[in-house]
Amino acid sequence: MWFRIGHMTNVCQFRQEACEDTMTSSRLRIVKASILVAATLSFVLSVYLWFGGSKDQGLFVAIWVPSILSFGAFMLAGSGNRE
Image (cartoon, rainbow, N blue to C red; front, side, top):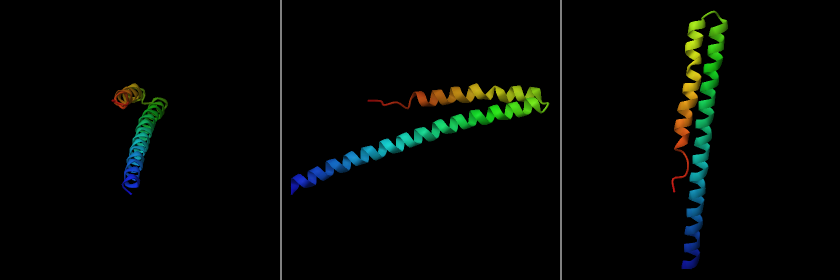
């Protein structure tokens, strides 16, 4: 009886680790998608402003794109395994 209980404990621990890995990978996908969406929206807004006649504002917003992508790279650089 004690063998089965110990075995079930190991299975539960394994499932919990797998669940935590799944949550981490889904959060990572959400962060990556959010960064790309923000950069894309910034690019689209800058093109809209540029061709809409507000060239200075279009350039200002265009500068956001590399800043957003750099911030995303900085945030994702520390997301690896730390074992």
